[in-house]
Length: 243
Image 1: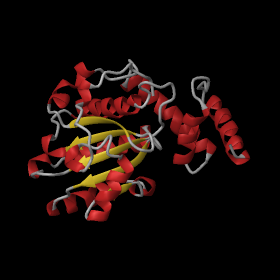
Image 2: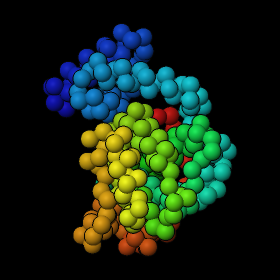
Image 3: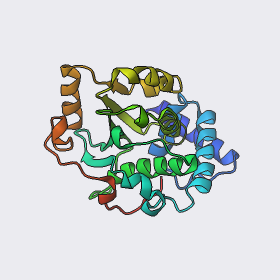
Image 4: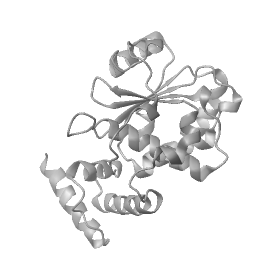
């Protein structure tokens, strides 16, 4: 680790403790995610971590959102956990044509936490050290206007940015129909530059090959050029982890 990173981490720990929060539970990789998200500004990163901790305590009191609290969303069978990518990132596949905007936003936020927590936790399966980041494939094939959920997309990205800093390694958007371009422009307005740089809208054969290379045939289902079978999120059994 570089000397500048060590100094920033040390300063951040002091800033967190000044804000009345202990840093005992948090290792350097966790603190670094917050530092990177705040351009290595130790005070801003400390403030972000303390806000995140308060949010987790109130919104996720058990440390995780159990399946039983998000049964309707899971029942739609739109989420798939595909194991690890070539770089070791857990792969989340979302089929948007099975999604419909939620009537209860609070419930939908619980669902966002459930899917992000479980995807991250899945990288710890069968090994002691998991991966800090995740890869997402968002498939818009066969969507119609009734599947469009601008608010839900914005909520998902805002949660990633505020509460899961530096968790997103890469997001591929597949099969974007023409009518969705204006929706995406609206969503993009709420995204930080660092988030936008991790998103590829796949429009040609070279980009499709990139998805196969990046995700890997072992994790990518056959319909996307891989060799894997789709695995529903609720069929993946994990030991709950705190994040």
